[in-house]
Image (tube, rainbow, N blue to C red):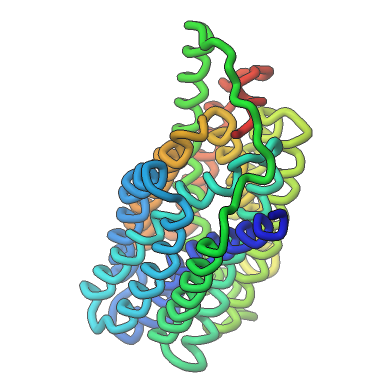
Length: 398
C-alpha cells in the first residue's frame, strides 16, 4: 500500500508539471515565433492567451465540486487525457482567433488540477508543508520546461510541435494512471482524527478573517506570479539579449532561473512544518518587494541574477497559501476550498495578460517591476493581519 501511495503521489506531481507547462507554451511561442510569423507585435498577440486563463480560473469551481461529489482520481485521469487532446488540437491553429479557442480548451482541462490534485496531495497527511512543496517544485519545473522545450522545438521543428509532443505524452500518462487506479484502492497514508472542537463566535470571526487574508494575498500573489512567469522569456529577450539571442538560448536561461527558484519551495515547505507561518510569509513578500524595486533598469548579468532572486521568492510564496487552505478546510469540501483559492488566482492571472501587454506597449518593463514591488508591499500589509498564534493555523488535515 505504501508503494501505491508513493506512485500515486508521483502521478500527481507529474500532473502539476504538465499543468503549468501547457499553460505557458503559448507565452514562449508568442514572444519568440508567432509574433514574427503572423506579422503581429508581442503586445498584440499575447491577449489571445486571456481566454485560456479565464477558463483556468472559472472552471476550477465546477472541477472542485465534481471532484468532491464524484471521484478525485478519476478527475485527474480526465485532466491528463483532456488537456493532451486540447493541446494537440491547438497545434492546428492558423490564426490568432483559432489559437485563442485552443488555449481556452486547454484552460478548461488545466483548471481541474489545482483543486483536485492538491486535495489528494494533502489528504491524510499530518504535515503538509513538504508534500505541497515537492508538488510545487514539479509545477515550477513545468513552468521552466515550458520555456526550454518550446524554445528548443521552435528552433528545431516548429511551434506546432511544442503543443503536439506534450499532448501525446499527457494522453499516454492519463491512460497509464487510469489502469493504475483501477488496480486497487489507494487509501490515505495516515488517517487523522477530525478536529471536533466546537466553533465559537470568536473562532468563526477568526476563520472569516483568515479566509479574507488568504483570498486577498492570493489575488495579489496571482498578479505577481503571472507577470513574472509569463513575461520572463520576453524580459530576457530585451534584458540579456547580448548573450541570449536565439529562442533556445532564452529558453535555457528561463529554465535555469525557474529551476533554481524551485528550490525555494522546498525550503519554505520545510519551514512551514517547523516555524510560524506568518513570520515566513512576511519574510517572503518583503524580499519580493525589494527584488522588484532593484530590477528596474537592470540589463545583462545583474538582470539575470536579480531575476533569480525575485523568482525564488515568487515561487516561495506558493506553498504558503496552499498550506493555509489545507489547514482550515475539512476533507469533505477541500477540493472546493482549493477551487475558490485558485479561481481567485487564475482570474487575476487572466486579467494580468492584457495588463502586461498594455504596460509593455506603453511604458516598458520598468513600470511593470514598479507595479509588482508595490503589489508585494500590499501583500505584506495584508499578511501582517494574520493571527500570530492560532489553533486554526496549526490545524491538521484528514
